[in-house]
Image 1 (cartoon, rainbow, N blue to C red):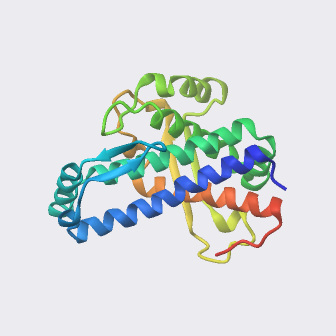
Image 2: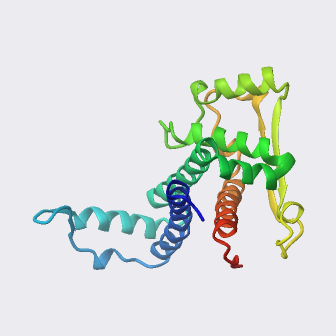
Length: 229
C-alpha cells in the first residue's frame, strides 16, 4: 500500500498531467468556436459571505482574440503547457529526492537510463521554476551547479536520454520504437538559450507522459491493481 505522502505526490503529478489534457482540449475549443458572445461577469465564491468577480469584459476580449488568431501562441497555450510541465517535473523531482521507494523503483526499472532521466528532470525543474521571460530562456544560476557536476565529477559533456518503453517494460505491447530522445549538451549551455531549443515541445510532452506512466506503474504495483491502456 502507498503511504500518505507518496500517494499525495502521485495524485498531484497526475492532476497536472490531466490538467494538460483538459487545458489543451479547451484551448482547441476556443480557437474553433467564438465563445465571447456568451460571456458575463463570473463571481467566484472566496468565503462564506464573499465573492471575487471575474470581469466579463476581460474574459470576452481574451476569447475573441484567441478565436480571431488561432495560429498565434496565446495566453491559454502558454499557461497550460508551462504550468503543467513545471508541475509534473517538479513533483517528479520531489519524489526522487524524498521518496526512497519511488527512487528505488525508478532505478530498478530504468536501469542504465536512470541517471540521464534524473538529470533531465532536475534540469527542467530548475529552469521552469525560475522563469522570468515569456520565451523561457536560461539563466546561469539555473544550471551552473548541475553543469559543474556533470562535467567535473561525472566526466561527461552531454546527457542523453534515449528511452524506448518496450526495452524497459515487458507489459508494453504497443509500438516497439515509441519513446523519448532527449540530449542536453551541458558543455555548451549558455545564458539566454531558449529551453524549447534545447528540448523540443514534442519531447516535453513525451517526458510529461513518461512521468505520468511511471507514477501509474508504481502506484499500480503498490496497490496491486491492473494497468489500463
